[in-house]
Every structure is written in structure tokens, then in C-alpha cells.
Image 1 (cartoon, rainbow, N blue to C red):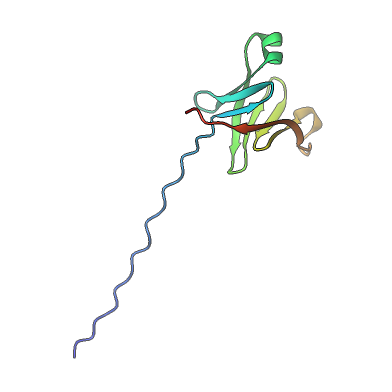
Image 2 (image 1 turned 90 degrees about the vertical axis):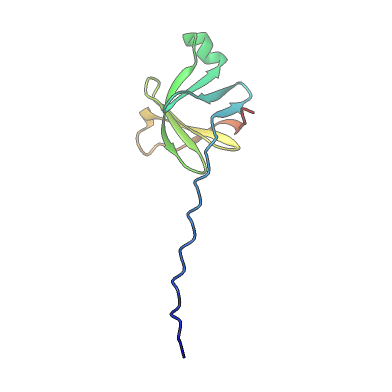
Length: 110
């Protein structure tokens, strides 16, 4: 009588990471758009009036829930999420609370 040894099962193949296509977040008065690398730009009338160009941000954190960007010149951080973006200001310190900024959503570039 021949006894077969059980064969070890191979672990399942790793699932490929889903591509994160969040590159444009829109709200009533403007939008945030991803630039090259970790740059983001906020396009709205206020930025255009004050500087003649969009506000510039650097991406500092990315989760499934939000993308966090920071503008060191103005000392503001923004979390882009649905259904709203939240902001906190550097002058309020590290323990500053996130406060509602805009109602908006992610949109596809298709």
C-alpha cells in the first residue's frame, strides 16, 4: 500500500493594489487638482484675485478616506474627502481641530 503525502497548498496570489485615481476634487466655487509629484493646486476666484494663480499645496498623507495637503505659505492643511473637505490652521497648534471647509466630491477625468 502506497501512502501519498499531502501536498502543501500554495498561498493565494496577492491582490494587486488598486490604482488611486483621485486627482480632482470639486466644490461649488472651485476645485483641487493634482500636479506633478506631490503637488496639488486649488483653483478658485479668491486665489486668482489675490495671486493671479492657484493656491499651491503639497500632499502629506493619503488614506482610503482622504488625501491631506498642506500650504506652508498660508499655514493651512486640507483633507479632501467626500462629502466635504476639512481644514486646520497652523497658528492653532498641533492639536488644532479639523473644521468643515467645503462640500464637494472626487470627479473622474474621463
